[in-house]
Length: 558
View (tube, rainbow, N blue to C red):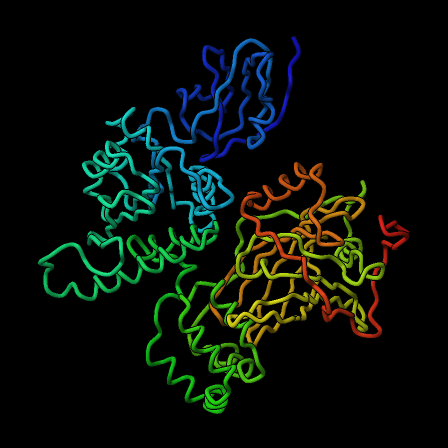
């Protein structure tokens, strides 16, 4: 009887598996084994008997976990939900919870994110909420739990500040939810039976987002109603963009509006007359020039229609209507005088670690820069982007990367070249220029760029690169401080813009996991029509120092 050993680390919110009729041995820092189905977190040793004839590999089932799990043969394991089979009110929310959210997911509903189950999407979102504050807790309940463990579910919901209901249609479930969620002040429904209604801060709001359902509201609530309708509109629009970042943003917005201020959303708050006074006092010429210029004026009109933290909408407006007048306006109003009073910092979580070894040797600064330079010299670009995670910055068609060393000593530059589909349907090329500086740890860098009058500062990490440079994964966290926006992202790159071989999927997914990213969060880049890209680097620039191009398949070390 052979044993298979694998290492894992179990985190709150992840799925795990239990074995019926099995003997589970757990060493959990001296604690006893939690009851079957309970979510727990710690390093441990777990012995699970597995049936030899099982058609599903037990290793694949544990691929998202990481303690020491030993398998022998006898019994069959089954998958259970991240939500406990028996809900316990004492363990649902920790004592440090400052925002208590629950999501109820109907049936076997799948999300529009590559048909991933909503349960998986929300469990991952729960982990991302803790990047902002460890006290933000989201628990996911499946519809079946409501009837199987009714009393326990009632106790959970009694502690809830915000409830999200997704695709609950069955009449028995609808009836149960209506009976047991009356005390929850904030409820938002998506794709649910019409009997389930939105409620924001205690006020019921119609699902068509046009009028209040409650009649005879006390005088003085008009402002609160208007604000609630605006919050609901923003949440529904963000949720409807069908990407994980906007789902995450929707929950943060609800926390910010009905529980406590969320620091990263501080720029949602209007600045009022002081902004206009600052612009007229310091940037009168730039303001007039912008209003008289058609492109600049259209940019302002477009931006005014975007939510302040909707980076997708904001950046598409900027990329569509960028012009010298708009850059001068932004440089004066935002960068020089900060008339909007905005601020933002580079996100510190997740703490993504860079590649530490390349081809069996410790990574050096010189080799790390050469990995960025990549195929430039043999091909007309360093890398081409295959997919990215950030919906605002990583999804543009035909993304070329140009990394090179400058004429001056120890200068290093990055120039992305990409297409933009403007709001009027045109396809145009854009190009940016970043200064790149080494950080203390090899494989980490600070990128800075002046983008349409606003300085962005980004912390990049080389997460993984194959020995033959067939693909690489780069991660970044950035902030446009004067614009009040912080962001994260990751890009998967190859020499030709074609997806890596399926044989590389496991390693790519492992690299993504280290960035806190699931593969279903990636946007594929359209590389089908990329003619006449404005490539090329300045005369006198240099490329590799340690790695030298020998042929089209490999970079060799000198």
